[in-house]
Image 1 (cartoon, helix red, strand yellow):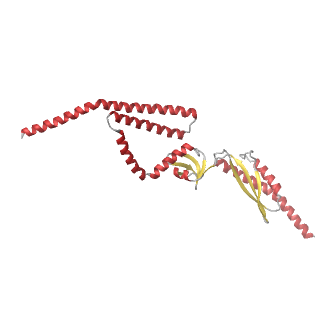
Image 2 (spheres, one colour; image 1 turned 90 degrees about the vertical axis):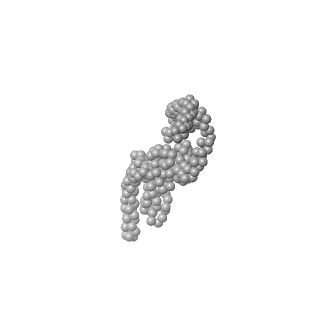
Image 3 (cartoon, one colour; image 1 turned 60 degrees about the horizontal axis):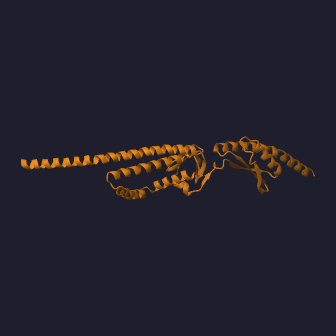
Length: 283
């Protein structure tokens, strides 16, 4: 009995000794692998600093710079880990293949998330709009607050934050009201037939030019549309700065000034029509 116990203890001692020997044998390689990974992490940091300097000189968009920063860091660190595994004698291709199969399964499960992620990269690369631009995507309209890899945040005129999936932005028409640096507004004004259209047109254009915020170039213009027996419609068009606050403020001022101008035009027309009616009645 004691002999069997002694043999078992000797076997355990031998196994522990062999394990320690293997550990000591692989310790230099392990230290080298750790050193290799640390060097690649340092290279990634230096690359990020270099990218930051280049982006400042080239005035690269901050959101696009963040994308390049993350992708570059991840690529360098992953490559360093692969080299470190090679130092330890581990075939990195086997691990990559295992991750590839797992990634394929996860990809099917997270299809929408990956689609939005890729769409976010394309948006940051193509830059159809930027932060603080006023855009409209489908039924969503507002100021761009933030562009992430998954969603684009819009602040609506009534202060509501709307998160639009990036995939939706790439598959729908996007209206960018800020891109050209100016925005045209059109106001429809109805006038009675007694008011001379040419006088009304000239008066409205002069009124619009005098409203603060209305751009002089291109100048305001008025089009005669919608002619009928009960009157006609004048379409007053003018240009302003593209931001939504300015557009609404100037439109309100133009409407007030235009209504006052039309009121002055209607009075002589009413008096003339009344005088003509009295003359006809006297005859």
